Image (cartoon, rainbow, N blue to C red; front, side, top):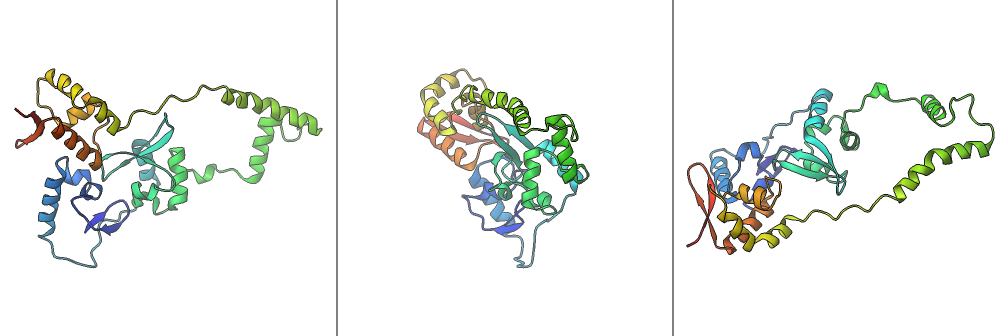
Length: 258
C-alpha cells in the first residue's frame, strides 16, 4: 500500500500503477520495473501498522496563492486548464470533475472543492473583502450600462437600445471568428508517423547516446516526462524497430541491434 499524497488515502500499488502513486521526487526517472522493485524492497523493511497515515499538511491562503502562480496554467488549442501533478511530475488537464485526483487535498481541504475550482479557473485566491454587495452590484452595472444609477434611461426602448449597442458587436465578432485549427497529433500518432523510417534517418545524425527523453523531445517533439502508458508504447515501438535498451551506472540509452 502506498500513501497518495494528493488524495490522502492508502492505495494498493502494483508494477502497473506505481508511477501514478509514488511521487517523482521520491522515485526519480527510470524504468517502471526497477522502480517497482526498489519500492517493494523498501516496503519490506517496515512493519505493517493499520493506524499509520501519511503526511496531511494543510496550507493557508498565502501558500495556495503561491501554488496557483507556479503550478497552474491556461492553454489554448484546445482551450484547457492544466496543473502540475506532483506525483506524476507533469502537467495534466483538470476539470471540476477530476480536480480531486490531481490537486492536493492540502490546498483545497480548508475551502472545499467547489471554491477550489473557482480559484483554479481564476488563477488566484479570492479576496473575501473584494466581493460586492447586492447594492454595489446594481450600482456597478448601472454605471457601466447607463452612466449612473439615478440617470438611467427612462423608457424601456432606450434601455434596450443601450444593451443592444453594447453587446451586439461582440456577438457578431464571435460569429465571424475563424474556426480553430485542428488539434495537435497525439503521442501514438507521432510514433506511427516516425517509426521506424524517420527514426533511422534521425538516429544517424546523432552523436551522443540516444535516450528515451531525446527520442521524445527531439524526434517526436513531445513534452517530457511522459506517462507510464506512453513509456510502454515508446519501448515497444523502439524494440520493434530493432533497438535495445542498455544501462550504465548513470543513464539508460537505446542501441541499434546488429
